[in-house]
Each structure stands twice: as C-alpha cells, then as structure tokens.
Length: 334
Ligand code: PEP
Ligand code: MN
Image 1: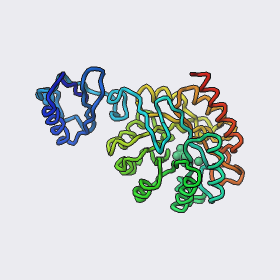
Image 2 (image 1 turned 120 degrees about the horizontal axis):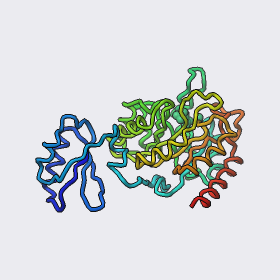
Image 3 (image 1 turned 60 degrees about the horizontal axis):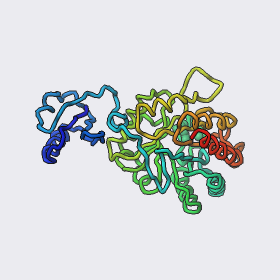
Image 4 (image 1 turned 90 degrees about the vertical axis):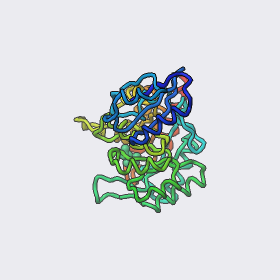
C-alpha cells in the first residue's frame, strides 16, 4: 500500500501515522515524489482497511500495490538506486566489474588472478571460499581459510572482495570481513539466510535462482531490504530450461524486465549463465548492450587445473581483451 500525504502536514501527524503502522508490524518507507510526500507500507497489509488509513488527518489518499514485492519495486522507489561500496560505484550509470576465480585455491593463485584482473580494470575481486557444489564429492572450498586468502589479496591489491555466504552461522564474520556478501543462486530462496544477511546492513549481491521467476527474485530482495535497507545488487546468472547446449540459459531479457520493475542495479554473470569459456565473451558484450550495470566473470590463470568451474573460466589474457571491448562498446552505445 502507498499512502499519499496531504501538502504541508505537520510532522507530528506523520509521526503518529508511522507509529500506528509500525505497531501493525508494517515497514514504512519514505517515497520521494515530484511534489507529493508518500509513504510505502511493506508487510502484511491484508488486515489494514483503506478507511482506517484515511482516518489519519495527514492522509490524502491510498493506493494498493498489486505486485508481490514492494521494497525492491519501482513504485516504492521510482528512481534508480546507486551505491558507493568500498570506493567503487554501482548503478546510476557506472559500470562495475567483479572478476576472479570460481573458488579460492591457494594464496599464489588468488593473488596472481587478483593482480591480473585489477590490471585489466576490474573493480572487485570475486572468489568463493564456501562453495555450493551439486556433488558432495566435489571440492567444497577452503571455507574460512579461503576468506583469509581473499583478505590477503585485498590487502595487497586494494581490490574489495565479493564472496558467497552459505550459512547464517558466519554472518558476523562476513559482516566484518567482506565488502559485498554474495547470496548464491541455490540460496536465493533460503529465507532465514536472506533475513539474517539483510540485518547486517552490508551490500548484498543476490543471484537469481536457477528455477526462479523474476518476481520471485524481487520478493527475495524484499526479504533482504526489510532488514537494514542494505544496498542490494541483482545478478542474472542463467536459468534452467530444456536447452542442454549450455549449462544454463542466460536470460538477457531479465535485464530490461528487472530495470522496468525494480530500482536495484542489475549485473550479469555470463560464466555460470553459459558454462563455457568461449561463450563468456560474446554474452558479456550482449549483457552490456542490453543495459546491465556490470558483470561478474570467472577468471582463472590455469583454467584446465581449476578446482571448480574451469570450463567456464576465461584466462586473464581474454579478460583483458574483454574489458577493452566492453569499454569500446559502452562508448559506442553512449
Ligand atoms: C559462483 O558465483 O561461484 C556461484 C556458485 O554462482 P551461482 O550461485 O550463480 O551458481
Ligand atoms: Mn563458479
């Protein structure tokens, strides 16, 4: 529900209205209108009648919001969200690249890749310490030791780090140690994890679940936003379809659809989206052309020896070429 306030109403009246709504366990958000003041209500408004809201003197009228998501939606927040995270801009016309290995393996590996992607112009170092592997027999990541290696790479290069959290038990550690907390595709609908991470007030990269619709993704974003209004970045990383020629089907139409429905920045991961290193370059460029705010790319210095996702990892050399091409393409599109 959106409440449109009368012009020049006293602050005490608005405060009383906010308190009533908070008492009903509803989240109240200010909405910046052109000339009107509005409040957005998120939560279960089914028990709230329009009439009871209109009784408040400061209320001009109310509008029901039919979308199942609220805080991530444009109705509550018409203008694009843009953030500055660890000195890097995301959204609002910036183009932000997160690159690095699928998983952190050794100090030499992560440091070497970090230096290479930094040299090519990446803004963030990505790397998995906790890995969500389909098979319990596959390499599961170095866990907290991997996080320590990422911190060493950050210290030595200055690149901020993005890494995936898989369990609430590490929330405080991630809050202190990580610049952007990644929620992986498999955990997009792990609601207790979303809620816990949302409480931290840290930037969150939310990857789309392989079988999730766009509305489901935006509802997942609402779980995070309901906490401490954290900066949330959405990531399209391919969905499961009948097609087997690629690992997933990269849904590039998700970019303009998400931009229409939501104010949150959208980045694209063509590595998991395709599953093949030679498809990463063309699909990354396609994502730029479709209006993405950035890319997440898996880069490995020895893809054939990688402990995870080597087949979809590009070399630092190809990453460097891609970065040049992205720059040229963005200039041509401007
Ligand atoms: C990853 O980014 O390393 C990853 C596991 O991605 P996804 O959750 O999209 O599969
Ligand atoms: Mn991977």
